Image (cartoon, rainbow, N blue to C red; front, side, top):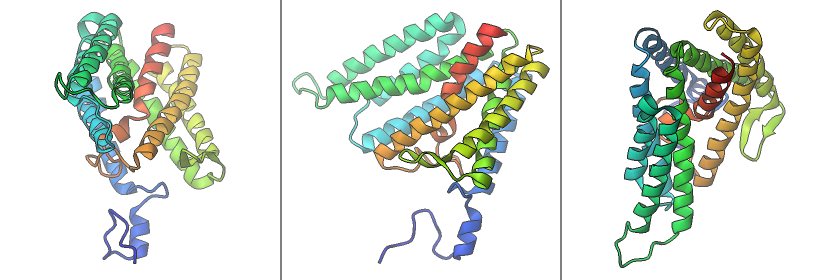
Length: 292
């Protein structure tokens, strides 16, 4: 006979279990509490000490990189964790004094060090196994996590950077909330069922409506910029945030896991909260740098 579902208390009734979880398979009260606490904390940082956000991003990405590397190594993909985490820190911190050039240089250096590390991680007399696979995935992780995160740092260091990051964050939150609400209430047509069965086209439309409204309001009220830039930002964030979700869903599907970690109740790990934020950071930097 099959045992109880992992993570579910067998002493609870089925009704209590259903009430504790959202339709998306999450503990909704915990998710809202954690998400709200994180959001308020970040807003306070942006308002009063925006440069502190650089350290917050660096710490979050160190944890997220460790989560992803641990999950990969559980699947026997030997990504070099130490140079990947330290190199990721260099990618982000080099953004402060050297801008985009520093980010690119640190990324290239991290890739080279990781290649050499993986080549000799079993000594000089043992040929590495799966070297090409492991180094390719290492480069993917370095680009997926710290490189994309560095654009949030580049954004906050700009003139009125705190306001720009706030527009970016509110846009992503609007996309998440709109997508969840519309998906739960109206979702009937799966978007990409082979990758993420619970993501629907109705949810995508909800994300689009909420994010465009959020982008329009924040760009005009916070940045005092053209409302069309807010519309462009909102549409761009929905597209890349959705793709970011799908990318992590496919990675987790291939690894056979539900979450990257367990640090954030109702969300999973740090990486599970950042999946849509990372590509959105790059797009926000590109749109707001070009047009504001």
